[in-house]
Image 1: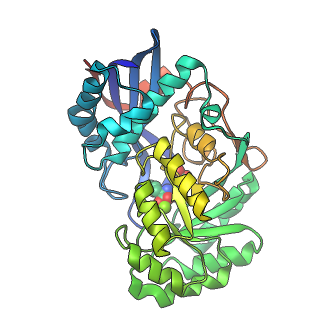
Image 2: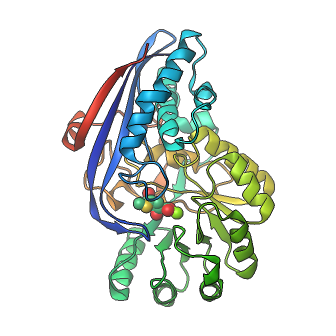
Image 3: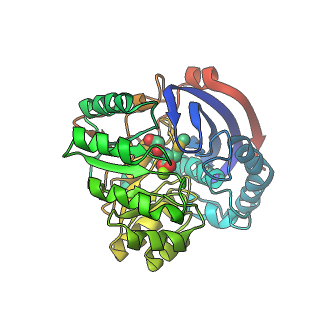
Length: 375
Ligand code: SMG
Ligand code: MG
């Protein structure tokens, strides 16, 4: 493929309600949308990608403005070189970008845009490209830290009424055992799990063991990103299955975590691991090792929500993902909104990874943009 121009837009989209985790309260999603104007086999086509990086480097070291900068300054020049040799495809992009250390979310967005362009050129849906066999995936929802337990029970009750198949509660020191107990007592049968976003240390092991009483599907990332060995130790001390999010940034780190006993379950987020193609590799190796995976989320817009649903339709994704309806976060999405039906999100059948976003919505949410010729 030949890229002509890449347009990077920083968008700021208000959330329907504040989303509080152990590291921040988000009231809007700031994200970078990547638009690639390319030619594939002579046909002019536009591809779109969404960058998972938040406005601030609080979930990982990446942040939206930094992703725009590294894309323009370092990633696009490498793709320009590659396409001069006629060697650029979505499948080879990651190898061309490998000399740039890290910046996986920026790389993932670019790879997604190339893949979207390629698949749109051939009229192929992402699910077909991946070879999925399911046409819908169960929908889970991530519930932020609330002001009080009654408020939490109210929010959880509303999501269950909407049909969500499992509830994930964000926890942090001071907001863990009691909120989890309250939700479990109110809903003895639901699939329930917790996510700490690295808010604890191994010193908290005895306290975290109290969560074992609530029949949780898993505990996600209780310790710091680089604490693989300590996660393995905590996993041995708890009966709740250990799930890693932030710690798994590649197939290699997934293999290490599995070998060390640090993960019984892996949350695969395409943005965190450098893209959908690396996500599939993690899925494949986890499946071969008998480790369950599920698809995480970074408050995706319609540019990536459907692609996450397609990924989650691979056979190793055996737990419901954080793939909720667009309305969970947004009053207005960039594309046709994704809806929950009978507790599921449909795997899209349109060509590519996403629909063409609405020009009005893009313009309404745009903070800055730059168009960069790739020659
Ligand atoms: O997209 O449904 C979603 C959000 C899921 O909780 C979610 N993501 O650590 O898993 C996680 C968080 C990271 C983003 S918090 C702003
Ligand atoms: Mg998480």
